[in-house]
Image (cartoon, rainbow, N blue to C red):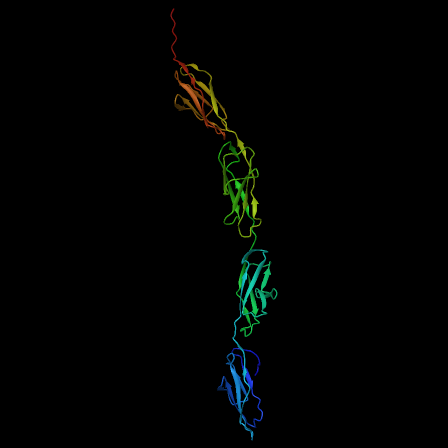
Length: 360
């Protein structure tokens, strides 16, 4: 038989008979498992052998004086191996990575045999070694990795198969930034102040750590509110990004140095050039403010009636006896508390006019 050892299912096998005393034209009857098969020929070719099929050949001799006229050959059986289909799948330690990250690809073979051969391919080009793993730290965005398996298993068909393809996403590095602001760096003692942050490349869930004079404060939010600032306190915020490929992960904002001003009580006093006048006399009043700020406002009053203009002075020639003049000053000093102050009143003595007379 050829081949003379195990064969794969469906393989062509040739059995050849060698006669002795067969005469010039012997006849042959091939048998498989006792049943007649094949042509009257010294060879028999088949590709439909099952495992452990038993083959013999009966030869009828045409020679003279042979006894008996037929002879049965030795029997042969072959081991028939079933065909197997190799397959290979690959996985990656990561499919979305930052530039420069090492990625390891691992192949899993089925019906690869005892000595499978692996050929890794990057974008169709051979890479790696004959190994079930392949590593690369220089991948580019959209690189595609596959692995070709050549099986050493008996009866593997086809011998060579390709794995699934893995596309790699390579992300560029991004730089996180953070800036902080406050409505004013000058505040009053005890005033509630809100610090706000603005970030870039912070990711979906950035982490904020506010700091006052380098000590941790706040509650991890994008804003920080406090009413306990002291003069020259320095506020910063530290951002830890979770954006893909953030580098560095943690950055620190600009710093804000706070000017904390103590609260002040405003006051105002007024004076006049005269308080005992004749009816119709013009009287001038002047206000003096304390802690009024850079541009205090004034509301003069005669009794409860608003008079005058927003001015530190007020003049009138229509005052009547007993009227009281005051002024309400509103301070624009940042830390005035309260913001308004009312002066003491000036009570006017207004004498009626009379015509002089004389008698002699």
